[in-house]
Length: 292
Image 1 (cartoon, rainbow, N blue to C red):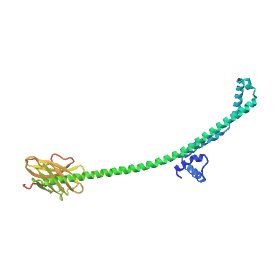
Image 2: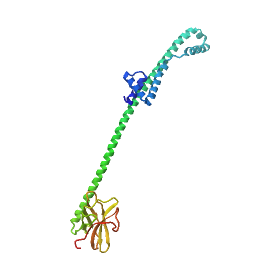
Image 3: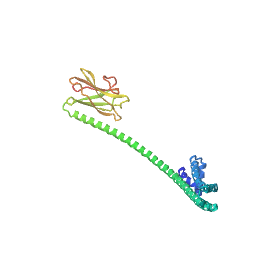
Image 4: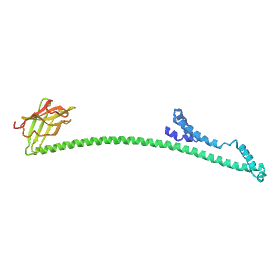
């Protein structure tokens, strides 16, 4: 039997109401060194012992009654005192015996009720603890499932946000490509990325630009790719930042070249995260407008 099952019948053990199998199981459990059950069993036995104590006769009943009769004889009228002491003792004894019997019965009933309540409370407490433990375990399982579902929900939200970003960028690219003043610049690979390529679309009317890069290496940690316009008047002008994930393809928005300046080149370099105001890193892609 389990520890919880043993605790359920400890109160019955105090009343010697166990079956042989239950007695054997209890003795085996106690030999295993359980520290809780012996203490509970002792409490139940102490409560059971109160019944026997309540039923023990009072050794001083006769002495108390004789003293009471002596005091009454000194205070009651002569007519009453004429009654023989033996008659009064006989009558009083019957009354006292009845009172004592009633007191013993009431005490025994109270003690019996106490032991019954103790037995019931012990069994009920054990069951409550077991049920509470089961609910606690179920709560832990449900909490773990909720945590897992929250993680899945957060991951799904991140994926949705990424897809929304891609769709928005493609929509911007389509708007630029459909602009009547569209200008395209093809960027060719340089030694750091020999398989890479990119197409830059510019619309001054929409004040927008986009870059679609293919086969660039994934962006290293702490780095970012940066798009540049190189004009005759200002030299390198930062146009936008983007990163490349495992698919090695990206579409990203950019600022258009400075208005009124002559664009000579467009380039992509690898820079520290957050970008820089002037190129410092290796150049991965480079291209010139068609009129150049």
